Amino acid sequence: MDFPEKIKQQTCSDCLSGKSLGFQIRMAFQPIIDWQSKSVFGYEALVRGPEGQGARWVFERINDTNKYYFDQACRVKAIETAAKLGCNTFLHINFLPNAVYNPETCIKATIEAADMYGFDLHKLVFEVTEGEQIPDKDHLNRIFRSYAKRGFQTAIDDYGSGYATLDWLIELKPHILKLDMQLIRNIQDNPAKQFIVEQTLAQCELQGTKVLAEGVETKAELDWLAGVGIRFFQGYYFARPELERLATTEQVNGLI
Image (cartoon, rainbow, N blue to C red):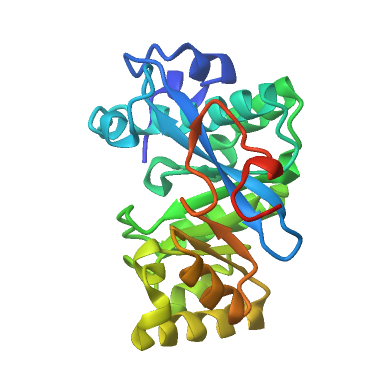
């Protein structure tokens, strides 16, 4: 895959300018909860438009021409904003694997941003969503291996809604697996969903992958999931995403 030289030499300052997108991006943050310690484990950075418009508004303006730049710009903006807000926990950043043509080259702006803003590289978690069409599993495996070598953590997002199966889970061995909210919704009353989650949890325990349930909205869902041994959670039950703000442990529902 051939990319123009000016893209290959993209730097952190290039991403911060926003020029190649035609609009600025901002970041909202939603806390990820460690239920065992009743604390904030990390935050997921979620892209927003210049006036706080939702992710759909942003993605309607992304295409094959600017997808690579958008992926890089999101990483840099997430690190910049989180660092300025004083984030000292894990920071989850979504990435588009089809925008990564070479893992080692594409990570340069990320490393530069972390160095510029004093953010610990080992607290970065890169999430790939099941909503992204991934025709080449080997390519994603190379990305995961390369990122792990750099000290980054990796995660599969929205597990249970798309392409990924237990075979993918076993081969990719992500540090974190995020269960899709459709699996979580009313799981306390749905034996079929319970079976899928328990089977997935068993495999994750075997290979040392943390399981995170996202989209938790009710105490009944939380109680069932915690009851089968899930430790990490994310969802409106705890806190909604907030634009350029990090919710503290004291501000998260159910932690105090």
